Length: 305
Image 1 (tube, helix red, strand yellow):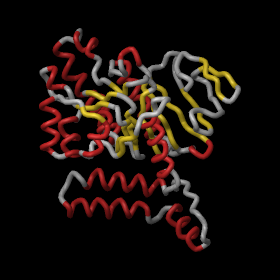
Image 2 (image 1 turned 180 degrees about the horizontal axis):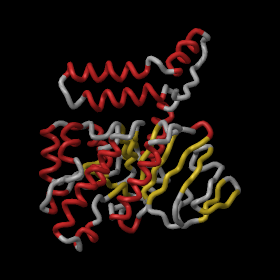
Image 3 (image 1 turned 90 degrees about the horizontal axis):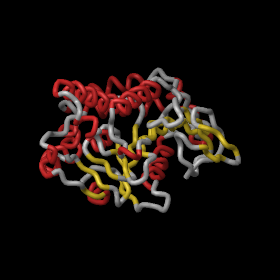
Image 4 (image 1 turned 135 degrees about the vertical axis):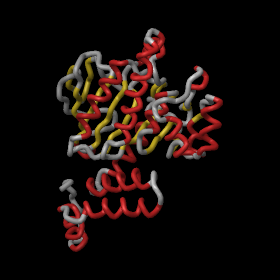
């Protein structure tokens, strides 16, 4: 696979540099547009096109530091989230790594080691907000784990709607090994995902588990055998995104909101959230399009209106 930032990519017989709009084949995807602010960008956003139009791919690309979260990386993630959040053409987001063998190692410990004590708590709080911003994106977000996801990297994956891993990917919350606790929402999201007992076991021990075990306990939705190009989890995530893509985007967004809000409250309150979200779909053109398409025996064409 052609690399991104700082490299010249060969795409369907064309050469281009990052920062330019590109049209051509790429990694089994028909077309894409790539936007990058600098030649050696550590975070890249691609908008797929052709049959995959509506899928946005966020790629972490800091291989020498195992995609750890430096101040610069955290700021770039926030910038990308702002761009995606308000883009009505984006229906599904995939978060992946462009660095082979790693999703993210979490906090940049070299940077953290030189921080003054008074700087640590505000930085961690900013990271916690970043994870919540991922969770609150209106469209579904899929984390593709083709390599190790440790500490804050695992917390970032937990903030996504679901996760797909390669069988050989290792993952876990390792902060107790460093004398601290997960500070980016890990204690809360892991417990809500696998249950308090299993979450305590994984956090107290700092254990890293493989993809197949993660699938068994419900930490990831799917674990797949790794392929020769080391992007099996990404390819499976792309398949899931393609399943979501044809569905009504307003309905998908309202379903996500209802599930996210309802899962935090009692059943009656959750049902009230569901009713409020359903009400948002009633006056839409998409709902009418689905009814007309059913009558005409064709597939609906949703526009998010």
